Structure formats: C-alpha cells, structure tokens
Length: 423
Image (cartoon, rainbow, N blue to C red; front, top):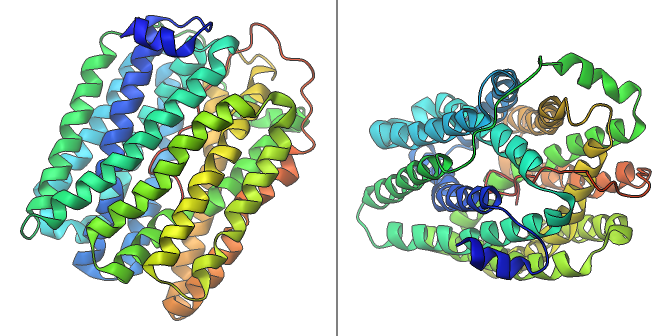
C-alpha cells in the first residue's frame, strides 16, 4: 500500500504513518457519508418538524467544541492515538444508539446530537494533531488533495449506496443496514489506529494563552474571524438542503443522487485545484470560490425542483475545492508561523475549532428562533440568503493576511471536509 501511495505522490516523500492516517480518514469519511445525511432524514420522517432537526444539529455543535477543549487537555497528557480511538468509539456508540433507539430517535434528538458531537470533537482533535505532526511542508498539497479526493469519492458512493439500500428495503430495515455498516467502518478505523506510531504527549495545556494570542497576532485574529463566518453557513446549510431534497422528491435515492453529483464534481476538482492553485493564487481562489458558492444559492431560493437542486449540487461541487484547498493551507500557514506553534499546536487547533462552532451555534440558534416566530417556508430562504454570505466574507479577513516566505520546517493540519460540513 505504501508503494502505491508513493507512486501517486511522485517526488513527495511519504511515510507509513501518513498512509495509514489517510486510510483512517477514508474509513471515517465513508462511514459518515454513508449515514450522517440520512440521520437528518430519519429524524425528519419521524417528526416532520424543522426544529427537531435543528436541535439535533445544535447538540452536535454545542458538544463538539467542549469536547475539543477536553480532548486538547487529554492530548497533552496521553498518547494522541488514544484520543483518536476515543473519537471513533464515541462515533460507533452514536450509531449503535440510533440502532437501539430506532423509531424513538426523534425524541432523543438533542442527546443523539450531543453524542455525535463528542465523537467529532475527540476524533478531529486527534486527527488534526496527528496530521500536524506527520505532515511535512513538502507533503502538504498531496495530503490535502488526496484526502479531499478520498472524501469526495466517499461522498459519491456513500449516500448513493445508502439511498439505494433504503429505497429497496422495507420500512426502517434500510436505515438499520446503513447504520450497521457505518458502525463496522468505525471499528475498522480503530483497528488501523493500532498501526500508527505512538506519540507521547508533553507540556501543559495553555488554551487561554493561545486564545489571547489573537490580540498580539493580526494574522491569527483574522483567520479566527474568518472561521466564525465559515461556521455561519455550515450551521444550517447541511440539514436544510438535505431536507429540501427529500421534501421535493420524497426519495432517499434522489438524495443519494444529489450527493453523487456534488461529490463527483468535487472529486474531479480536488485533483485540478491541487495541481493548479499555487500559493500566490490562494486569495483570488478563495474569493472566486466564495462568489460561486454564494450566488449558487439563488438557483433554489425562489423556486425549487429536483433539476434545480442537481444544478446547485454541480455548482457547489466545483466551488468547494476552489475555496477549501487554499483556505485550509492558509489557515495552517498562519498557525505554523504563530507564536510557539510547535509547542502549542494542540491549543491552536482547539481555539480554531471554538471559533468555527461559535458561527455554527449562532446560525442554528437564529434558525430556531426564526422558525418559532415566523412561518418556516417564509423565513428559511431569508436565512439561507443571509448566512450563505459566510464563505464569501471569509475573503474580507484573509485578504489582509501576509505570511512572507514559507519556512522549510513548517507543518500543517488538514481541515475536515466531511459530511458534517455544509452544503
């Protein structure tokens, strides 16, 4: 397997840990893409209420940053691999809980969301720290691009496979099947984690000091504010668009096809963007991707059909790689050049995640208040138009970031681009 990845990477030198971290990321992505979108539909079919789905997602985004802080403290005291396993175990417990609760899942929506958020928190803290330690500057674009390809491929086959299974099985048997498969994939990821080299922790946890660093480091402050606006879009777009696809078609298979078009285009454009966008082009690419992403909303804002939804999926499938690859690289260039980045890499990751979730929680709380006070069908398009500006406004903050020449010893972390992210 190592030779296969080395052939793909070409002149870039990669090691065994990087390969297996990609394998773990691939298994995680497939498990999430297979089931997570359909959890929203599963809850919708039980309740038929937007607020049920919103509370489920609020649970995710409230518990995720809290767990990130806890995981950060643990990661500075024990092996990072243990934290990674904790994340995958909690994700496995989430799907096991959904299987056990079954038709009463909507009643426990917030608690289920909290359990998933805990899993995300442990998993992504460990995954990001391990990537920070394993990935070198020379392998940065390869890791970003190839993990993006794996995630896009998972996004192509996962939802389509899940939609096909659900459509061809009676009642909730299809949902039980896909949740079981996801459970098994996460168990496989735990198994792969035993192959990774153990990485001992060191030092105290200086969360407050790194949080305060934004007062002294303009680049750090700007990138954190950019992440707040990123979170504003991510807060509601994933579940609202998925629900709209299902309401329009009344078909899980149609939702799988929607994700196939979206991820299929992303799959192709991650290859293109990785080769095409150089460091000098990052800011222009972020602006271009943000503009495409925002104006694509208007395809489905005033009238909606399945054809319009597919066109929307195609366009955002192109836009996401254009904005994400340079944005991720710039984010961790900022971290790599920040004060005591090597010593406090865990804290930088935790603070970044905190700011993303401030945006996500703000969006969902606003969504809940809005649909409580007004008709959902009237207010949701307004919310999408407002919060859809999030990725476009990222450019307002990153345009003034200046990093100088790259350092040879700089390392980075891969941003998660998975199904918990926005549509």
